[in-house]
Amino acid sequence: MTALVSRRSLLALGAGLGASLGASTLLGGSALARAPKLGTQSPYWHRFNLGGAEVTVVSDGPLPLGDPSGTFLGVPKEEVKKMLSDNFLSPDNVVLEQNSPVVNMGDKLVLFDTGMGTSKAFGPTTGRQQKSLAEAGIKPEDIDAVVCSHAHIDHIGGIVGADDKPLFPNAQYYIAQSDFDFWTDEGKMGSPLKDFIVHARKNLMPVRDRLVFFKDGQEILPGIQAMAAPGHTVGHTMFMVTSEGKSFAFLAISAITPCCCWKSRAWNFPTTPTRSRRRIRG
Image (cartoon, rainbow, N blue to C red; front, side, top):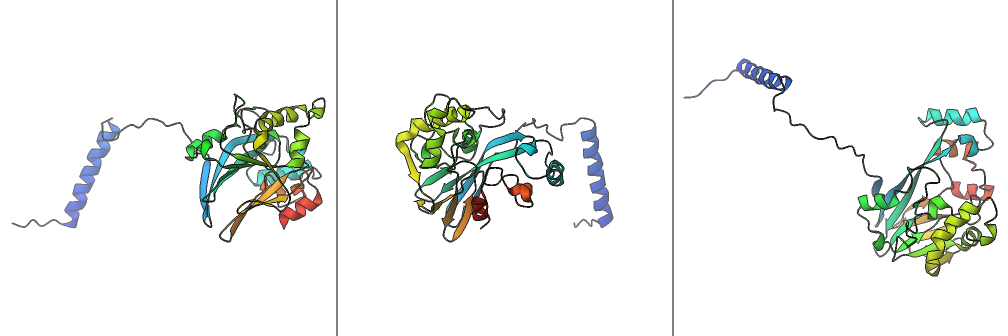
């Protein structure tokens, strides 16, 4: 025997089921399971391909610089505040995201800069690079090279851990000699630069025997070219990374807060000379 089911009867059946399930839910039935709140955010890393290389960008966490007027000189305060507000950023506190690319070139795994490490000079939100690397599935012992843009604490602070031992035990370290010499000079310990000198020595001296000094324009590793961009520090360097015809530039601190750096005179970082700015812009 064949049952004939009309469209109207199907709709009536659906409505009945919906009402039944809705009543069960509203009355506290077990139709919907309760999941625990996770309390976690998305991981602080991002991965993409660059030609034949794989790039993983890991974060050291937000780094607050404070009042924008201390960073963007030569531009009226209100103009800077408007640019920040127009881009949904705080007009009263410049916050940087300390991001480091880890480039897998196939035969070498290369990390650029190491973040703040254990120092909390800029607050508690920094120093998470090791955690970000773990979230991205990268082991510190697998890093073959650590390339340093300059020797400020927020870029070399994660070379050693709280026990003063290198966190990347199998890596070779690369930095401009001019920056190394300047920021590890004990003769500056009595100056306002003391804290910078202390942190630079804390992180760089334990790996002194594994340091490689590079020069402007040098291909320091296959596919990685150093490009001098002095100004922020005496030996500040940016890097061009190339694989199979595809490239990206790691600018380090050559430019910060894009809405201000690229769209106005505020792009002029207070200590970056004109030659470096022109080089970065190409």
